[in-house]
Length: 307
Length: 293
Image (tube, rainbow over the protein chains, first blue to last red):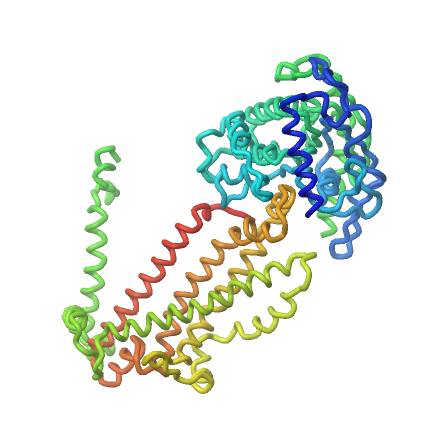
C-alpha cells in the first residue's frame, strides 16, 4: 500500500507540474514539441513489457492454455488495440497486466517492475459496465481519488462537463443510458489519472451510433491527456480506427499472429472510416482474423460437444 | 378505451359482444372485502362445518372495538395492548439478535468462499450451521423450554425460550441471504475497486457490503415474517403473555371472539412490520431494483 501511495503522489506531482511546463517533463519518453498533427509514435523504452507470457487454466482438470509464449511491448503514450476472435485469451492478457491474474510462466513488467496485483496506475474498463450501482454518478466519479483522500473536485467537474454528464451527478447508474454509463465509467477511470488504461471491449454493448461517438470521444481524451491505452476488441474497424498498432491474436492458445502499424494521421474522426487507407488496413486485418475466427468457432463447437 | 375512460379509471371489458364498464377500482376492492365477510357470516349463520361454534364478523368487530378500548382479554387482567407489546418485543428482540449474529457470520462465510481470502471460515462454520437448518423453528419449542429459563429483567419476566425460538426462526433466512448476497457479487466489481486503489477494507466497505445489502434486507424481511410465525407457536406452548397465548387461552375458555380478535391483531402487526422493513429497505437501497451479479 505504501508503494501505491507513493506512486499516486508522484503522479499527482506530475499533474501539478504539467500546468507549468507540460511537454518537457513528460517522463522524458517523448521529445518536447512533438505533439503536432503528426503524433509521435511511442519511442524509447516500453512502458508495458510482456515477456514470454503463458497462462494456463485448470478448471475441473481440463487443461486450457489461454495464452502461450506471448511477447508484446507497449510504448509510453501508445494506443494499442488487441484484435482477436472470442475466447482467444485477449482478456487473459489484460488481466495479467491489470494484476488480477498471475502469469503461469513469463512476466509482465511496468516501467521495468513486475506487476504485483492491481494498482491505481493501471485503470481498467470492463466489457459490461462496472460502475458501482449503489453509488451515484458523482460518487462513482470520485471513487478513486476518495480512496486516498485526494479528491480534486475541479478536475472531476471538468471531466463530467467534457463528457456531457453535468447534471447527472446525483443519478444512479441504472437511470442512465448505456452510452452515458460507459462515459461515466471512463470519467471514473480518468479521475484516477492512470498511467495505463486497460479497456476490455468497453463499447461492445453499445449501438453502432453510440459506439462511434464513444470512440471519437476516447480518442479526443487520449490525445489531450497523453496516456497509454491497451484496448481489446473483436471489431476490426474499431481496432484500426483507434490504434497506433493493431495486435492480431490467434485462436487458442493465444499468440500474436501479426502486428499492423496503422499509419493514419491524427486527430482522426469518423471521416477516416471511408478513406482508402482505412479500407486497406481493414481488408488486411479481416484476412488475418478470418481463419482464426473459424478455428475459434470449431474449438467452441468441440468443447460444447465434449461437455 | 378512450382517454376519458382512462382518466376516470374505468376499464371496459367485453361481455357477450357488448362493452360493459367495470366499476372503479375502489368499488371492486370493497366488493371483494364485502364478499369475504358475507361468506364468513353465512358460514356461521348456517353452521357450515364447525362454524356454528365460531363468532361471526359483526360480533368480531364489536369485540375488537371493546378490546381496543382496553378491556382485559381471555380471563386475565391485561389489555390486548400488553399482550401485543409482549409479542412485538419478542419478535423485535429475537429478529434483532438474529440479525446481529447472522449478518456478520454470513459476511464472513460469504467472503471466505471466494478464492484467496485467507482462512476458509465457510468450511468451519457452514456445515455445522447447515445441519441445524432443516429443523423447523417450531420444533425447537420443547427443547428451548427446557434449555432457556424465564429471566427477570427490570421487573419484567423475559421468557428466553420464546425469544430463542424466534431467534432461530429468523437466523437462517438472514444468514443464507447474507451469504448469497456476498457470493453473487460479480468479481469484476471487486476488481474495479482494487484497480481504482481501494485496499481490502475499502473494498468491503464500498463494494461488498453495499452490494450484499439488498439481499441482507430481504433476509431480515423474511426473518420478521418467520418471527411472527414462530412467536405465536412458541407463545401457545410456553407463554403466559402474548397474542399467541391469549388466542390459545381463548380457545380453552371457548371465547371465540377473542380467538378471532387475536388472529386479526397478529395479522395486522405482521403486515405492518413487513411494510416497515420494506420501507426501510427501499430507503436504504435506492439502487436495488437492478442486478449486480
